[in-house]
Amino acid sequence: MLVFSRKSGESLMIGDDVEIKVVSVHHDQVRLAIRAPRQIPVHRREVFEAIVRQNQLASQSVVPSRELLSKLGSESNRRAEKG
Amino acid sequence: MTKRLSTVHFGEIEFIDSDIIRFPKGLPGFERLKRFLLIDGKGLGPFKFLQSLDEPAISFPLLAPNLVWTEYRFKLTRQQRRELVLGEEERELVYCIVTLSGQPQSTTVNLFAPLVINSSRMLGLQVILLESGYPVAQPILLDAQAAETARA
Image 1 (cartoon, one colour):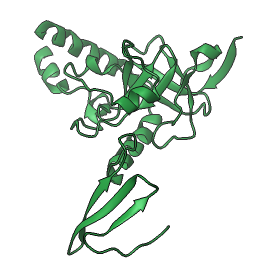
Image 2 (cartoon, rainbow over the protein chains, first blue to last red):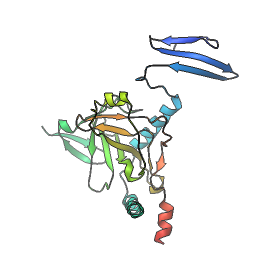
Image 3 (cartoon, helix red, strand yellow):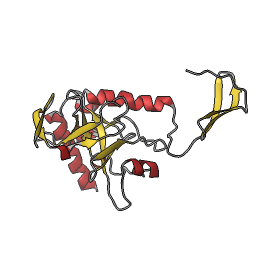
Image 4 (cartoon, each protein chain N blue to C red):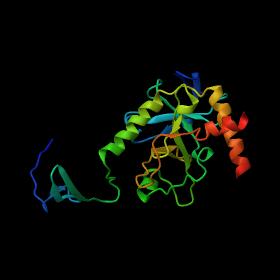
């Protein structure tokens, strides 16, 4: 992994079209501004990790129990009545 | 030509090549897995399963989100439509991944990262609805308690 030291207002380029700029540094928090083409999704790592974790849990699912199916069935009837 | 796959939940299943849905990027956490079958079985009620062809032990329960969340709506970005080779007029299929444990009350659905499938090209993508505020784990029996009170 490459490690850089940057000051407020300084930038890094990744390739030609991704720029990461340090906006401010305050105690242990850094504000970053990112300019990237639309097709490159930019998000906090925690967001992605939450989806990975949920996918992993889901992959260990059991088949739906009869109890769940009947509960879901009765709820959807009630929804239909309401709707 | 009919092919066979031994699965954990459904025993041996038969399929043909045109049943295969390709997820070119895999799913987050399962990037290696690119080929899936959509299983719509007896006894599953409204659930379907996305069964991995590459890893028979892996499958994901799915629900059509509007069954549990009538207001569920989102718009694909141009880039996502491009990845799915989705034309202007083409409609996509949307499923949400369900986490099914033993307890009905703890069953949840992932509304934040739905699966979008272009069924005419059999291409799929798990999209992340960054600005939506939809939860990753929404209990599907939201009013399970109310339902029981009403029945009693």
